[in-house]
Length: 310
Image (spheres, rainbow, N blue to C red):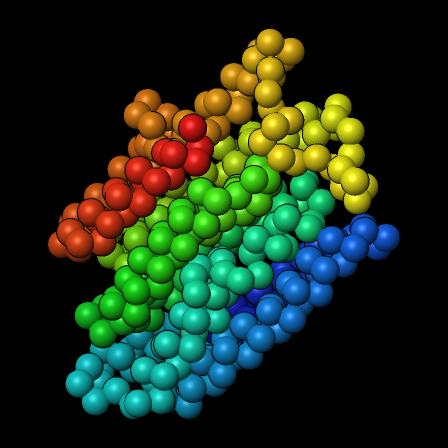
């Protein structure tokens, strides 16, 4: 997240991605883990193509990989930007949207999160997603902020699709882990609201929301790991990660039940939890920019989120 130019962004993402492909498939004898690694690798390679092509077009138009130089090009040619530049911005956004699991580039997320060992799924859903969102913020804020009016609709469309698909799909899941995978997609949508608005408060909103979401997700996955260990494996030898394993948890282990309850309330954005203040900060950036349609839609999706979390 400290890249000064687009070449370093590409190298950073590739180093991170290669490590993640290995972690996803680290259980060599587990078919689900192998499938997760293969899907992640294929989709990751595909998205890297978009990202690199976008960077190439931006370089062709502006003559530089440097974020500050690209911004100088935008400021000096506000009305006469090359068509290659706009194509580069679009492909760059698409490539980075793949990395954070935003719809309609989210197809790898549920299968990879479900098939990977739970502890690595936790890492992907928190640290990696936060890094991806931070990378998008840096590119948009440091290079493309002067032409916000020309790209925000693209990001708003991706945001709406991400919130819709993530929340609606999560409702139909029978596996707790898979539900959290779709939940991760929907939370990428909330983070994208702050990126779409791109106000002075966006960076604060992104940091606080990422922290609140990460803590709640780590807690939820931690409880899942502990509870699934004391239940028999499924017929195909996998850990049992269905909702049923939590039945009677409050009686058997009140502390774990309390941690899981607080995590779910925070992810749902119930008042007094960190998740509520995260959502409040993110939605306030949309209000500040005047994106009221996006704000209302996000609040409706939060109501659907209440259903599957509770």
